[in-house]
Each structure stands twice: as C-alpha cells, then as structure tokens.
Image (cartoon, rainbow, N blue to C red; front, top):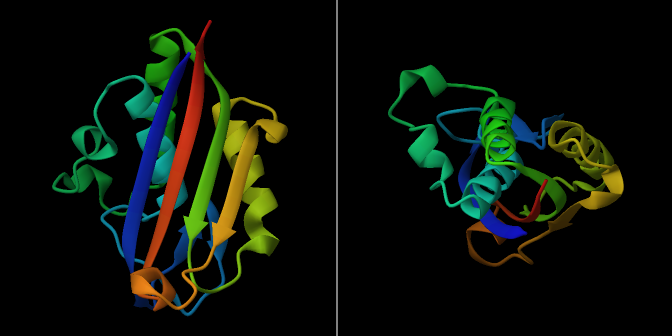
Length: 157
C-alpha cells in the first residue's frame, strides 16, 4: 500500500471559467492557470504521483511548456493513472477537499465524484469530495483563490 497527498491553489479572476473535477460551474469568476486550472484534478494527480514517489504535477507538465496551455486536466490525471498501472498499483480510495468561498459546490459534488470514480476505475463509494469555505478569512475567504487537497491510497496488484 502507498499513500499520497496532493494540493493545488489558483488565483480567481472575473470572466474565467470555473472548472472543478471536470465540471464547469456557473460563476462570475474562475481559476487562472496555464491549463484549465482544475484544482481538484491537479490535487488528485499530485497525490498519485506522490504516492509513487514520481515528483509532482509540475515536473511532468511544466507551465513553461506550451503543449499544456489551456489543456484539459483529465490529460494530467490520465498520465498519472497510466504510471500507477505501469508500476503495478490500483487506487483503493481517494479523499479530497475543495476550499472555495462561493459559489456553493454541493449541487456539483456528485458529478465530481462520478468523474473521479470513472477515471480512477473505482466505485463511487471510494471517492470522497468535500467542499469548505474560508469563513471570510485569507485568500480563500476573500474569494481571491481556490484550493484543493487530496489524499489517495494505492494498493499493489
């Protein structure tokens, strides 16, 4: 068994799309990033790479590389999954938290879980996605940033 932890944070900006867990969420602002800035998929990708001791998402998908400009973050997650299979592992479960002041994410959590379960090839009851606000504090609470964290458990097959 291996455990990995990943996190990601992005600045928020008016007029940008807000994509979390592969879901485009109606919002007046979205995350700024080199790719589509999907913090949840980035955190899960980082957690997989960490569990495999293969560095972080930036070492595989540099923000200096134009190939990844506006890229769909499922590409990054797919590569991490390919690497975990190559190393003889599969996902046991994933637990994640999204920190965002607004909009409320509850209506979108189930679809995020379904997207992750499909990509990770696990049952939906092995995928946890939680949403928290910043209670008006720091960059999250002031609606200046979005952050996600993920913990993943891999097992050798």
